[in-house]
Image (cartoon, rainbow, N blue to C red):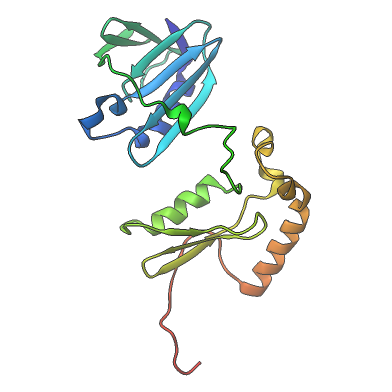
Length: 221
């Protein structure tokens, strides 16, 4: 049995449940893939359009299973996860929930998430909160277009009759492990970028976040 802190476990499920497939044409994708080894876990969920992955700490031991995307409620400190033939059991306090899971392979996501990919041309750091707010503005659109320039300029978003933008995250707000993934220019021009942002805000007076409805062209400006 593997133990995961209950808060860590529930946060993992909340983060990944939106990436779990709803259609059962690929039944494995209706679950979360959980792999535990050497005190660390990797939880992955994906469907045909998006993928999410969470890493964290767990108790020592080895475990690989398909996990139902369900929250655990109770006063205990840890969720115990155990796999037996055809089933997965979740234990919190004195309550154990056992679910049948299919014996089918999960998608090889390692071909998608490759830290050594050579085809990546640029990287930029964005606030997930602002990115989510911006995406909600385009709810109902079949697609949107992202215009990404260099790492000092805002990302422009076009969809339907809307146009929005989101600025890169300030260099001081980036988590240390993520800084290694950013290009040297991002680090070198971090301070210059903050000055540029302030100047742009004074000049354009735009608001970060929600997209703005496009106004019809005025024939008599």
